[in-house]
Image (cartoon, rainbow, N blue to C red; front, side, top):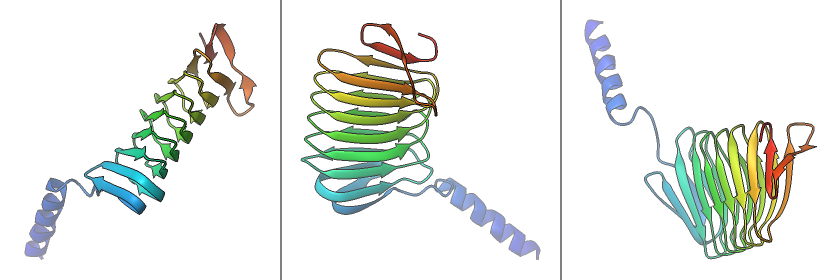
Length: 180
């Protein structure tokens, strides 16, 4: 009995030393590849990246169609007329450029940027920020206090909370759900 306990204890230490049960993200679909926690979808269709409880990144290029999901921080760059969507936890980052289309639900303290003609639909957690510029179009819903800045020829609609009440305009192009 004592030897079984020692064997199980040794196995538990070995598993912990190998990363504690964390696993690499899975990426399915044409054009999708991953190296460690970084995935890329180039000219792919139906690329799906699942990262479970681990933080990961996803880069979509060459008119790819991408979906990234994690319970931890998701870092996404959506370029070249790609269509990107996904769900990320706290401290996530999404950058949508070059006429891409983005649809993301991100946790607290997240940062989203839409520029160069991107069309963005964003649901952001508390203490998050969004920036829309360069003829982008942004529809932003804040689940708590957050800020959105719209510059240049960007079109922005910012709503707050479950009731989807209009955000407060703090100054020209600066919107807030909560204090300015």
